[in-house]
Amino acid sequence: MVESILQAHGLWEAVDPETGKAVKVKKNLMASAFVFQTLPEDILLQVAKHKDAKDVWEALHVRYLGAERVQKARLQTLRTELEMLKMKEGNTIDEFPGKVSEIASKFKNLGSSLEDKIVVRKLLNSIPKKFLQIVASIKQYSEIEDMSLEEVVGRLKTYEERIKVLDKDDNDQAFIVKRGMGRENQAW
Image (cartoon, rainbow, N blue to C red; front, side, top):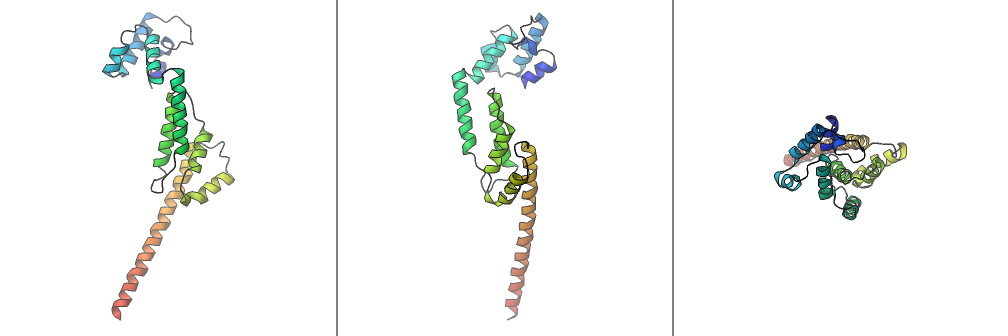
């Protein structure tokens, strides 16, 4: 998020070690100020000793992403978490993709990425049996390699809403039949 703000203000070159450009003092100060404004006080006190925006950014990078070995371990933990994630019978389609997206976001925060096709496959392979028909249909008639998470969630959400309507109709019918049976028994 801070990176986006710095880019929007034309200040990213002050922290990007790849540019190799000499950064004007004013841009460096503005970039540092933007970064400092986003930090909690305890973290701010730890990185305030750095004068250049690039040094502040690198200190934060090491603090939050850790050394390369630590970063790899965190990514492996996230992979395991993703593999073990299953949608429970009581979860809705709105809840579960949020959990998958959260893990994908954590991957991104660690400087890695999770391809859409992996996230889509995980979602389709992790939902309860009541979605078996729509999952089979999606896998059979769609190119899941090219589908976005949003598209799959939309299809699953539509199916879930349809199931709810049908279940409600079935429950209403059962109630009417049961209620009618009670009256007939009273007449006897």
